[in-house]
Length: 247
Image 1 (spheres, rainbow, N blue to C red):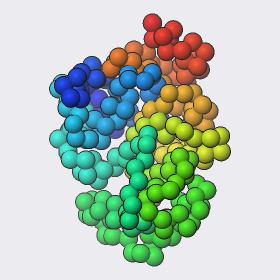
Image 2: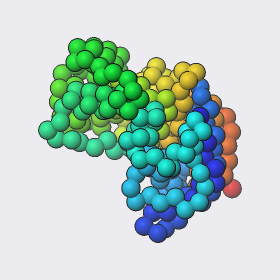
Image 3: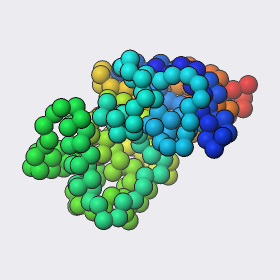
Image 4: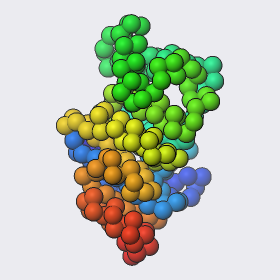
């Protein structure tokens, strides 16, 4: 599904990614772990096409297509979803309005008919109920006045409604309490743990991996993947720290 080969990228002229190679197949969940400043968020932004992140070498393909040649909205239409470490607030735009426009724009790009208002509301309410988000929060402006946990739950609802093939989740566990962490883990598993989908899960800590069992764990430090392994690697990181494991 996703093939990253020798990826180098800079931000403001500073080299951040220094040769990342990774293959993510359908049905797989890969966890990327590493210390602050190692390039984890930069990797997610490069894959999503955020402006200001310049690829200087290497390639990325999604289903064999050159991902780097696509604009961000085209990447989304191909089935990519980016979950933010700090979900942004959008005053004046309701969750329902935002998500219906986003979903129908993607459906139009794929040549699919738009969902009617009634069908969309059924879909949105089902996702909100499954993830423990109060239905009235769908009517509120996107993330405005939400707690950290509510923002992350809301993002899982967004992911469930849009139903991507590839989810890149940048520190989705950041700032979550125990209950919110459990809800988010359930959301990732129920929406994305399917044979035709894949997840790139970026996290500092092993705790989210108690709920979302990865197939592979990669240690990213200094802009490079320095070790890869199974779920046991996350436990080793928890015991030894990044310095001990990456040495």
